[in-house]
Amino acid sequence: MERIALLGLMGSGKTTVGERLALRLGWTYRDNDGELLARFGASAAQLKDRNGLDALHAAEAAVLLDLLNSEERSVLTAAASTVESLTCRRVLAERAFVVWLRADARTLAARATEGSGRPWNDDVEAQLRTQVEYRYPLLEQLADLTVDTTDLDGERVAEQIAEAVSSPVVSSPAGVPAAAGPRRGRPARHAG
Image (tube, rainbow, N blue to C red; front, side):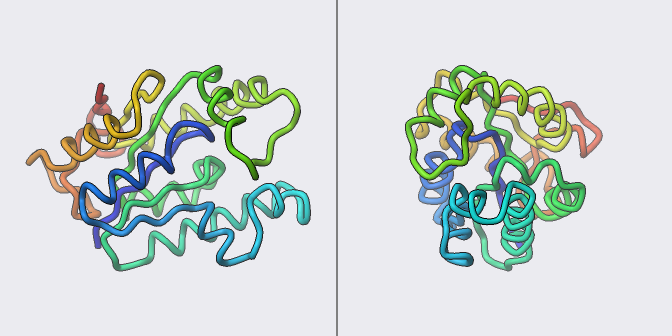
């Protein structure tokens, strides 16, 4: 049971980093967006339009919890909303090495509007600033490793994470060597 979970707001680089990290480690890559599409036949934006935001967040949490119960060695990317779920945070803490991909709201907005199928309102940067205020304290508390992705490309971020999880520090419950993190009673480790 070995899992690395990448968390961060939309535009933080989870998909890009996740694909590269899984390839680097030789692990399976499981992406929330792909899992939503496979399970529900719709993108996050389509699910939001069809069923509302609360239903989308419930679907994202259900997908993450299923991925965390998988027995395969995998790199997982979680929807940004999942950090708001106490159940998701508890299971993440128990079953994964959690990496927070952090970036400022302006960078996130520029990246997030490049992709399609994302559930945004008109003022993306304002929406992201609100999410930063609410979700960043939760992410900071949960993370075993924090990587600021503002000025780094996906390959460099994947390299930093691979180095961190390969260091012979302390083994986490997920079987991955653990860098210090608040949930393990030590200050979070920051890369970069």
